[in-house]
Length: 340
Image (cartoon, helix red, strand yellow):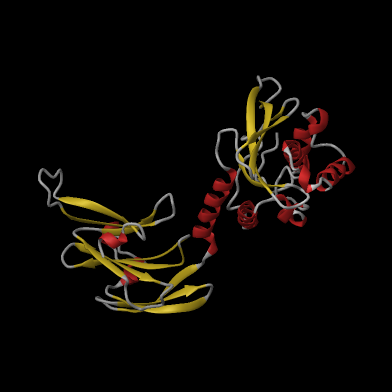
């Protein structure tokens, strides 16, 4: 079975293989004319007939004609097919896919698997959520291989009532494991945005033993110059005898909540301390907007939610401390006000 590299790429071989395993009116391998006729039937339905049956018809048309959610034919109908939020998630995800495949969901969401097929008929049923939204469940038997037993699975489409002749727009898909497709695409795009969207770099303009001057560059243009309170030239070519935590460092970090980014330095301070300094690239100020000196270390990182985390240590002033120093992790924007 051919591996699916993206739900947005139209893979003819996979489409044929999945379609050949289906029966009745749910075969995706039906003729183009049959698919067109089904779309016409859905589009011609009067608005006052937006019933559960029309929601099922919409789901069948989507499953048959837009299985890959964003194929070559989808842009012409994207405003008709999807809610504003789901449309944005799909367009952002397609942007990721176009950037050397750095933002792919490597499985078929209808199956929640890379390999396998629907064995037999798909049963469509409706669960009303409220007056404006319904769930359409697609119940089927999933089989990885003809020699292995099938198991029942359900994928659910969240449909919003729309003031169009289509009656409904898709707002989300719940995978058989219960995960939200929209949430997964949004998270994937944040990952793409952090690592790929904004290109930042820095050049060393001058340095001595106590200070440095650097230029920060975005997309090949200088956006600011900063005078730093340590020699950061050593971060470009650290000496072999230096430990990693001893090196003066420079970092450029972009997060979804701060797309213009930060300049961050970690510099030796005094006999053994490290001082963290944060510069807000959006403000264009040459001065640090936050500084903290750790007793022995000061570092930064990005957590699983793509938040900037500033870490340092300080003496433990509590009774019965297990160690003389304790680590503090501060999330930018969430915990920052506590220590400013």
